[in-house]
Length: 78
Image (tube, rainbow, N blue to C red):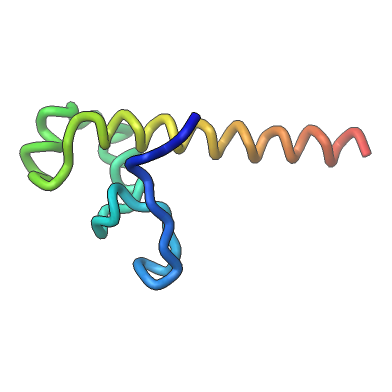
């Protein structure tokens, strides 16, 4: 999957994955969802975000976890 809304810039936020070049890290968005905030409330509190940003941040986080798990699996079979 291509993550067009997720940016990683070493000069911004220390290279932490952010949403569309904004200073809103993917981890912040995922944390808000984990706390039970709805997409509508997140967009209301972060007006620069769009619903698709939230969905892509979640997909990015899932892909990052999956990639890390694959690395663990390959290390355990070595």
